[in-house]
Image 1 (tube, rainbow, N blue to C red):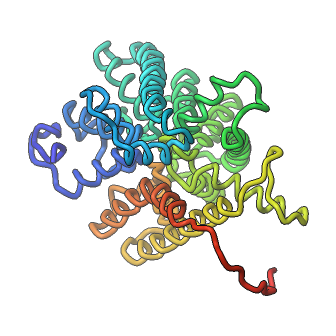
Image 2: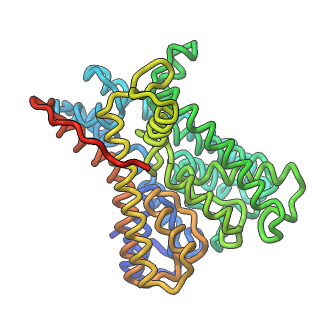
Length: 418
């Protein structure tokens, strides 16, 4: 409703409802897909509304509402504490409220530091008020893995693809927002690696492995592409390859023209977007935790072991079943959305697959087809963004609540596998 007001855009006329709801969904689901350019179309008021939606969507509805209740002096109920505990992955109920306070503090500190660095750099190119606003906007957008930008003309960060200060600051904000608050707190509280939680170890290892594979893969695939990294020198190529491996973690910024990437580069990016960030973070996807658990299953199967272990801990079968369910249902959603979009849109299969995966993973990267989608295509992407943001967590909670001990066993049967 706010984005539909004449005050929200630069022309001073009501915004079409489909554009307003698409932008609002993309912002609150911290996706970054846009049908109109954020800087040239939306007024400062509209940009502020988008920024507020990004912040609320990143922190999560339960965290934001609980913090509001604390400010108002309202008591947080047991049900709300249980939901917060499930959302953050903590065990003791007594630590939920304290964790919420820490989440808000950590968020504001990291976003503040990022805003200061970005504003100081952008003050060289813009007047001070605009540099300050852009610093705050991009810091919040990057930490919350949203990907909205104010550089205009759908350029994202391509005009700064040789600037390490801009790209590395944005990249580390994305990484910090994408590994989850509980991982950050666990790392800060434990002095030794071996005392970290298994979930923390899997997130750190999985994130590092995906960044390495993504960086070298994109460097290999795009090195000779004259439309992306070809004209850059080696340090700039390495910088952009690293940044392009970070952003599919559901951030959505791009320093090279995604629409002109090689098919191999696009396909690798699709895989990274599907996996996404860590559970309980500001990002989407099936989550690094889920991918790490499935990788442990594959490794155990390759070694001929019945039990799945990681870092000296056994992963319970119930967790493996949830991981398989989330991954396969997400794959099914992307498949169905892609198939439907091929019927409603006139674009190539890889472009449509890229768009569908970006929407599900709440990434925001696009080959440039988003503004040209039909009304049906835009509605499909809106629904996919919404499901991608709330679906995996809702599914995991539903499966956890339905888990009951079995009082009867069934005769085993042999299956032909492989």
